Image (cartoon, rainbow, N blue to C red; front, side):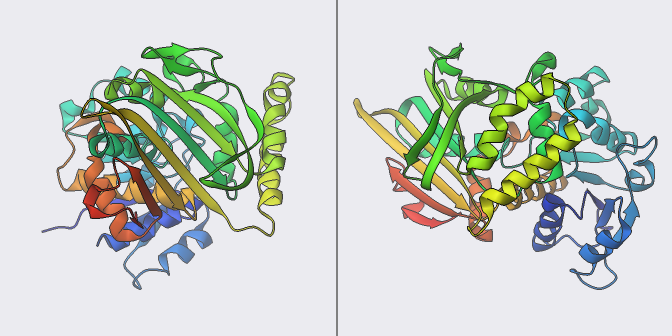
Length: 383
């Protein structure tokens, strides 16, 4: 039986390189590594078995820059961005070549573009979007918690953030998310908003510039931010309340983020602002150990009484978490576990299966509390 050709676009980047390792761990070899820098791609290929992987030039921003890479692929894992500038560029190129596609980002703009061009399900092709840490795992973990926590869950509080390097793609996407990234051309989310009574309510929460949270070391800033993914999560779980906070442990990044909307409105060069974000992240990280945390608290009822359950995930890197989810989604598509069509990862990946997969790979530490502490007979372990 012929082995499927898996193309990893952006294979030499922070996420792509980790995704290549994850795919190899899953038993996939003979990968096609795509990117713009031959020497960097060769370095990634040399990490695997000699002569097994091929490197192919690819540039998602150039006319026909993906054709040499996508032709002959059975599935493409997209690890490049900026997400909200490329939109469905990579997925469309993969579909044109007769391949499936998994995108570690993508979000609403890519889904809208793909569905305008016709449903890939008609050709038996699958596209999985938002198959990363956030978005992706940020919705899968609360769904897993809801399945192991109290019955009748009505409220969720989430804190996500960390201290790590900032890649150019992340820097540009962060800025683009202020004006795009959501459905129908809207921003990716809304600061200070929350879900109340099952619907979005503007300006219901407040930012805390200097506070503490038990899941995060030291003093942090927390900013309420409600994304489209979070709103969909509230609907799926039937939540009355959802409070979502982005956590900023470093003062340099937080100070710059406060200035960004004004600087972009004034016409500052986005490339220069991205460089400043990357530098700010490096300054915050200097002399400190990188980490990334996702903390969820779910409230509901058990036997007619109030009950709560918590899940805290700690990892060295959000990039590795993103790579792990993306590689898992690729494997699921190839095994026939995801139907044809355009999907968000949180809607088609089984939370229990994802958690078991991540546990077996040791990507992060997991702590369960309250009603979820008995899940799998483990209160603390490796996720």
